[in-house]
Length: 376
Image (cartoon, rainbow, N blue to C red; front, side, top):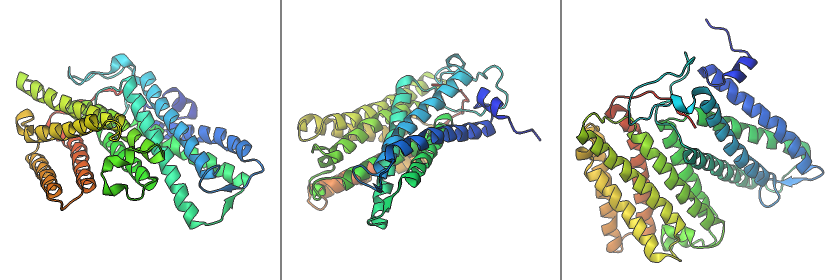
């Protein structure tokens, strides 16, 4: 039975083993607490803070957690880069496995390496999840403890603990990033962002128009909605490389099919981001064109999947056809006035993104897995 690693050994090689990764995350969380708790004491000195709202503990925690999340995620990527080195990563297109020198026992990191723009998008996604998640929790607690205030010392401790927990989780997410975890990040990010936009909408009857109405105003709702779409689009482009990295590409036909699916996912991500860049009230034609284009690209990919990727599980292929049929049926319901556009967009969006997440889960069995180091 091996002896537990010392703290100095963990600091020297923070990602050598599963134990050292967990210990490194604890050290990161502890370091954030040591910095955040005194900072909270200075910020809150002499004040009794409300739980939520302007100038509240919840707002301070949300903003601080967003910064801690982004920094912890970047720190995790830098640690991996130091451990494996950019040269040790094997691009999934070329195949093969290369073990970094001196890395016995190091955990496997499936998937292609992350580029700087991938890291930027994912760190921003983690920051937004932390910001909106803590804001939502503070609002719930405010409703549960009406009229309650938080004093300086407890507020500083809660501030430090919240930031430490956020940094701990985001560091682990960074160093253990896999296709499965990436799908979870995408799902959580979309849910948190869209629900926040709905809850903060200045017009309570926005749903009577369409889902894009959330991005038409100049308030927090529009900012949260459009930012969610833009960052989610960037994440989908990352998903495109992750999801297709392990697919078989031994023949010209297999390579062409894999490239069609990869670039189809990239195009969906770009079009999704453009939906957020061009709000419907100011860019009606462009907005509707890119939104429709995203649905068309998705339908083409799903219908042609057996031809593009013959090795995909048959059950998953049939499920995709069912999704497309449901979206078409929803369109018919909207045309005859049975459903409004918001219902159609919500259900179609859930189906499309659930398909992308399931695609990530099914590409592993579709072909031989390649173990490569994921570096920043």
